Image (cartoon, rainbow, N blue to C red; front, side, top):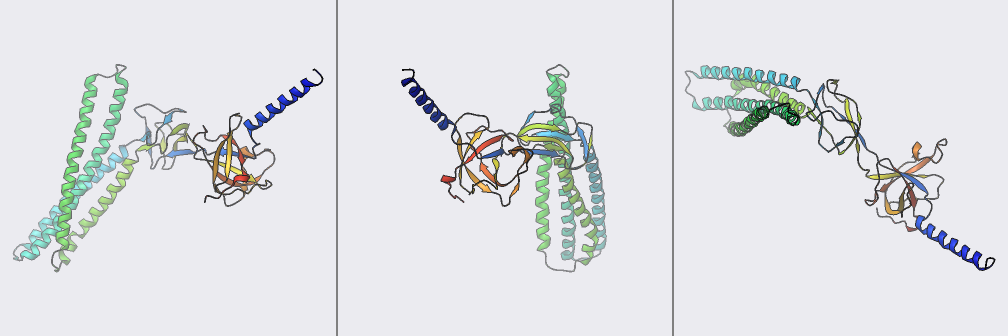
Length: 372
């Protein structure tokens, strides 16, 4: 029994076990791939000074959602420029009133209703444009004020549970914020009406019968140019106001903090680096010495490095146009450089992959199909 049957049984059992392990592990991988790892430096769009957030300062490995405010610039410079623009609008309004007086003086003693109506329309068109610009400036000024009140209210609500502020203080702050909101709504309604009047007057002026308009055009041309400059300045300030709140472009985890509240920044300076939670694809390289001709649609099998589970099937989506140096962390021997053809592989949703993770890849050269 020991010399005949037992060796045969042992050999058969080892052979069956070997076959089972082979089925479980499959073929040896013939490539290494890396899951895409996206890191985005979130930068400021204009010069400014960082101010503290109501929620407190972000820390490493905090999770942020897409479009969440991760930093905020001080709004005092923008408020000062908006005040200057409002003063400039007041000056333009006074000059427009003076132009109206000049038109009336020029028309005194003349009995030409046709000409008088055209001049009135030309002056009124510029007045309505100034009204529109005035309403827009008021709305943007109130928007800055609302952002400040919202920030202060969020801070008060955060410390309310600790007994640092009273219910009356929060109620007063909320009341101020609501008053600013109502003022914005009222100005938006006034803006819509002023814009309608401006459009109607411009249409009437455009459809007016041809006549000699050199004098009125010459009189109002400097004012019209000044109003255009004011409109462009307001557009620029609106972009800057929107840029006061620095938002995360993606959902992910904070992996680096570059600036802190109180520091001055120049446009383009990074504030925080956010790492994405997932990778959209896997990048592998087929070495020049391998007998593999990757094609779009070629089936591949993936296995997380170090795991013992079944491989997961996926496909080659794209192929790079040039042979490139293989990244150091994908080299088989770190001391020997290698070159390969980059291959873009779809990430299977059922495989829990982390960005930057290495996976073992087996290219199935027997079942290659071209799906385009």
